[in-house]
Image (cartoon, rainbow, N blue to C red; front, side):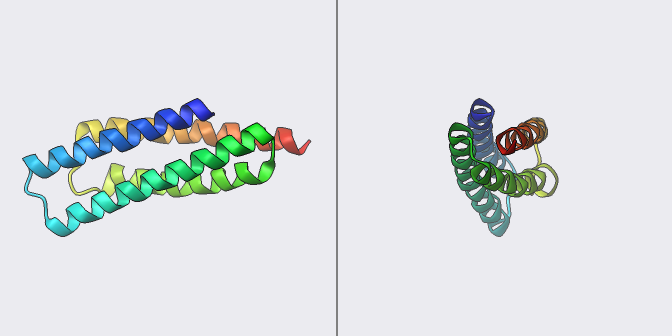
Length: 122
């Protein structure tokens, strides 16, 4: 689960930064919307770091609470990923591919977290 999360964070943040800067240079980007996209991108990076921390902590200590917190934060990350998939100002084909991959990873991580929580409870 940790490896999936680290790959998620790297793919998400760096590729989204590259695509936002590319879209900002190639297309006419309204200033207020560019700032919104960049702010949401950094919020997503912070949420990812917190989610990975709690997921790793819960997995290593075999406690349900940190895994539950990580699972709740995953919902926020899914919402931000859907924003970048559907409502972002300019959506490139690479954005679609990366965000769909992220949603699949979130789904797998969520299933694994639920299984881990169930195993830790019993």
